[in-house]
Length: 209
Length: 416
Image 1 (cartoon, rainbow over the protein chains, first blue to last red):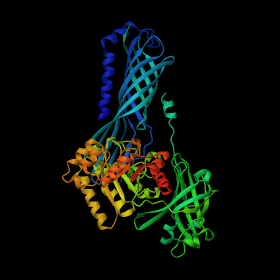
Image 2: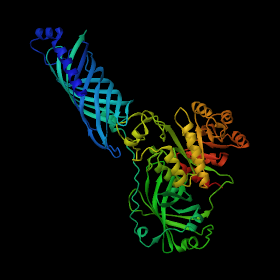
Image 3: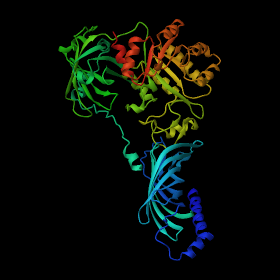
Image 4: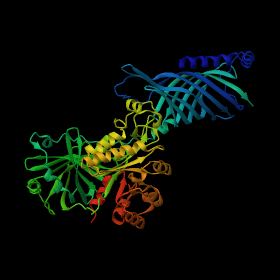
């Protein structure tokens, strides 16, 4: 159910972006897209997207007397706001959502579930390395939330220091809008949680001066 | 940047050597070492080989723990260099005594196999005789030690010099977190039943344990505010331990070496019925009513008395909050307590023990004052060998709390 919601949210964002008057006007004015959304002006660029993630950190669950099966695959979303100055190094902030892992447990008639998700809040540094290819490195925190439903319900959270590292390829549709494919490593190193994700993102240069 | 952060983090590991490969020790002809031979062995021994690794002298002491139907006896040796110690099991083979185990230095990750022997010419005939009495130079323990799982080849030997030091009044060697910190790479987890059974091997005569309450009000042993990977394995459960019921913790959470988080009841049962420990310091890590802890303290003091055991259990008061919660108990004045705060607070709570931190010095005048009031004085948490030696040599405290009880044991037993 949660994955469906995320997918619908992502689709809505993409549709809203593509159907906006600004974008339509932009596309009409620029029938021949340039190779890149990079310009030499200062600009603010929004990255919104989502995809799938896989939990790659080690885990050896040992709930006693409980059958369990771990789910490492899940949906992941990204929200990133970048400042593109008139030089190569860019700065920004990033958040989003990812479910690190979840597992169901069962003991007789008693059933339950544990899931651990994270909301990153990271400062991002980025630069283009070759044409249309950008690298990103982030440092900050992950807000980790656990949801346990077994012998009662518990929601609990902690904050972990963490990083991320991503590489993306951006295909421009216009001078203002493009779509990016991104591979991202997310690492909450205090809690030793890490995922690899593949995402599709809308890249929208919504303000420039 | 991320890769650099990950790459720079070094993981330390202490190898617990495989000690099962000594053929003589595994022989079917071995028998247990007679009880009467054990205590006379205890003493200060001078090293004639291996001194460059372990120092000039060692304090040798026996301990035991009861596991199920078996009582396991261990011979421990505490050294003055690098907080080193060895722990061996002993057996008799014909006329010789064999000791098989491992050594460890707590200042590093060094460890290895230790194999020791006392043959008839080195004193086993004395120890195996009737009513053995050991005099200086009459018993020599000799053998080999190695590094990690390597076959031990380096010689070590030590010869009996004198008896262990013993004060007229009881001196308490107290182990922090039931025996030591998990971060010191010990083979069992801190605040676990396994550690309670292990800690007498480090020379401990008592323990400090950290008490918290679960969501459903079960007193358990756990040090930190949160479930974290320093203390527990990855389970998906995070955040304050007080968020979870005991059944939930019991089902999902395992300590770093796989043990369950014990209840206070399980811990006190282990102390009382499975170890020779004589002192338990219940360090209250939570804020809230203390009636359940007090009730369990009373219950186990009664059980100890019924079993003829000399066991003290005190409620620790480390903060003003804990002190205020303690004062709300109906009969706090007759409840054994240990107060870490001021001398006025000690009087106010009628605590049996005053326990200042070591950074305030030996405070001999204050300790005299406390003694004059019929109370005891402990000091915490002494881990630096130089300070430990100084407090034992110059101080008047009745007990020392340490993450390295073997180091306290060395300096205390070697005191002249």
